[in-house]
Length: 416
Image 1 (cartoon, rainbow, N blue to C red):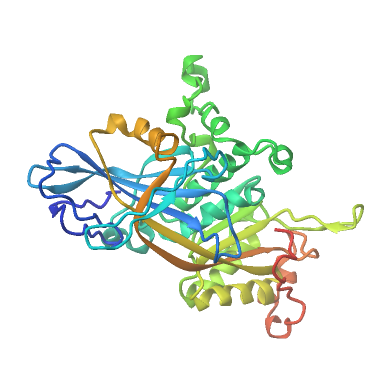
Image 2 (cartoon, helix red, strand yellow):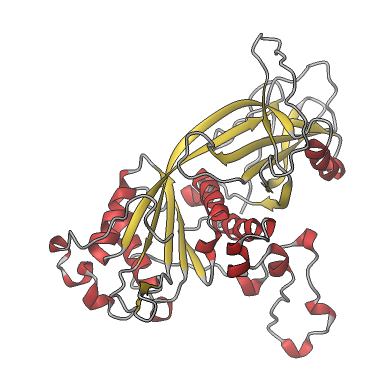
């Protein structure tokens, strides 16, 4: 897959890619930037004042550009993502910068960055013109990653991301959930879940197709700096929602993720059926007198999509799943682009930015917010994982008469 390139755009004009989201500020025309590296940066977070669902974590999206002598820019590598902790966790007592104004008379505005927990480099997007909508990274993926960092118990066990596209949503969510537990080791949830940290994932030896020829060195742990998912931890496969789910995939997954999959109505029925059959059952535990939530479904998409409401109704009435919706307000903060001498100074710059005299305060030039809906669900306690053909109203033809039994849980009452 090829990444989009931003070639030939003068530094004094906006850089526009297919997503129309990358913009560079007006640089001083007298400043010699030849050979420099420009980092365009966006911070994603749940709005601390508008979002019912909040998170202490933030996610930074970063793209590097090299500057040519004619002041044109060319993308250097692919996108990288930086997981950041709450800026207030280790407050250094530094006050915000004093009020100042830009040349146009507008006041400068600042946000505060938290400590970098982990950087993932060179995550590729496909060319949208060649691959269609599945080749781009949608901001729903960032909303899902932040949601999973705040609710890491969703990602325990064996899972699948449906409609994954280039897979960045699932990758960020899985690693982010592990980092969230790792960053608060004293929490009861982290101790109880024993969630795999990024170090655990990276240090898992790779599986070999020829174990007899493996030497001791061939299974050496992967250094943390080069942490990635080994082949044994993840796989990519085609899953056609319009076909019946293979028997080996039925009642098989502890969690199912989806980012903006229900973006128009014809996708709702096949998606709901795939989720219902693939998700593990949640039987009633008579010994403890409570339902055991074994399989969890999470879908996040823009709130304005009516098809998400259709998906919720289909899961409830067609497959008797318990569902509920959570509202999320995702903010995107466009930081003033950073000009650095070379790529070798990136790490020192990141550390200095947070721990130095600025105290993590960084100027930004724009902030936008988008409303999202998180649809969460799990199976009815009477579904045993094998009786779907007889239990699901969508399969028996009685969906029209199944209305009141579908549980649409009120905010804050569900077990997820």
